[in-house]
Image (cartoon, rainbow, N blue to C red; front, side, top):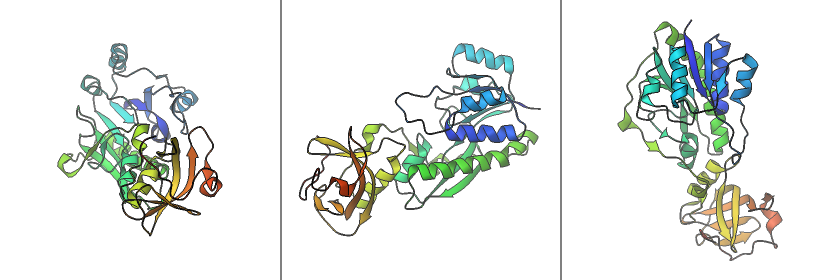
Length: 305
């Protein structure tokens, strides 16, 4: 039986590890992460899954010298990475005799890099996917083993798409793992020119640019809404997080409130109807609950306080 070391976190890590165990995989060690106190923890725990199956795990970086020595002792056939947040160094990748592979949350080579699901929604894509590929020094650039597409509906939030991508990831692992074991898995060279690379996102990147179209702003909002930090603007010197909205026909000056019931704001093209929002430090409310108290027609949202 082929031995495996798994690097895993989040729902993708949990579900893909769960599928490997369902297939009887020989998982010798798991690397995962401690949960961040500044992050909303809405996903399943890889550590709990490891404990339930009696598999040892570490939350320290796999690249540390002591962890490299431990990997040398295990001498795994495969190293598999599922939503692990640390870049794995080439000297670590080389320790897996039959290959080191990563499950990426996009249909590669599109959306290589960080937070691919959020970027796909923010950019208004209509499809994305999950891809299993060999790891090389360059991020998300090794040969493709298998991939599965998912549809992004216009009403989907990033969480909706993430759940679809997680299901697709499990489909890919279920299909590919037996082929990896018997040596029949595909190796399709990655055509980097046919794709794109995206960097990470910070909460500050959720600032709304009202000169963009209503559809573009709507895509940003649904791309960073719960459980992510949210898209935001400033009104009367206060930060306001917009949790849900939709584009509608009409026109108005960018950022200017043209109606309070419904709450309609002008953009670079079209109007944005804001449905739920939150003054920082307050509670999230439906837009009508703000009428007369916090928002007046003719006021403007801005990018600064």
